[in-house]
Image 1 (cartoon, rainbow, N blue to C red):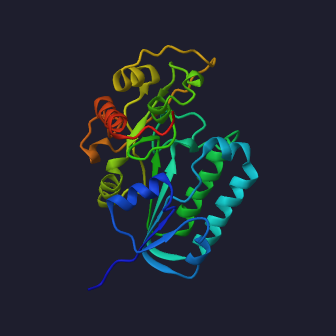
Image 2 (image 1 turned 180 degrees about the vertical axis):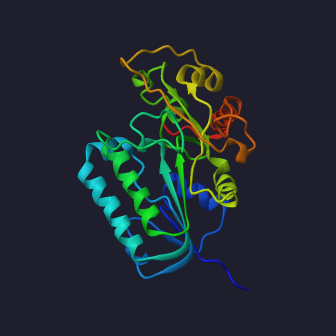
Length: 260
């Protein structure tokens, strides 16, 4: 029996650990062994190996650039029939109203977004068969960051502005949604959801009245897709606000609190 060879880069991260639960891989890489991929050939490479801590990447831009450079250098020396890159909404400095056709403006873009856009361009330029998935905020089992995690764990919530508007992708559907994109022969897709305010998340998922003004310009994400019809959605998002709240509630009611 012939088994497809499928490599996962970033297998210890949140996205990688989620994918391991959803599909099978034959080879596993992270920053400590990524050099071992050089000279290897696979049917598919799934890359979720770019460091995901935005604030740290922006605080230490040279270190972040080196991490992406190492990843690119190793991928240059690997071969595959198809590569799937997990990227981010943060390639946009302003994600309000953007879709897959929106030009990415790199002038003034923060290091986190700039380096991940550089990785996207490397994939486009060096692989014949590729799929780039851009994700917004995430929610799902074992989530360890963002406001959903913070509300569950009462983690520095005084620093959260209730007027912020975010999007949360339900990670339990990731591989299923990737397969839909592959079947539709898409090269770039935004997997996204209807925007929801921090205040709504607090009230509807955590039964908490939350009014807190911290900054002059709260975050306002409206990350859209052109391919709602591919995902049986008639809107600019794969997931409705109702579906997002269901995912957040499921997380809040099943996840163990990790902070006192």
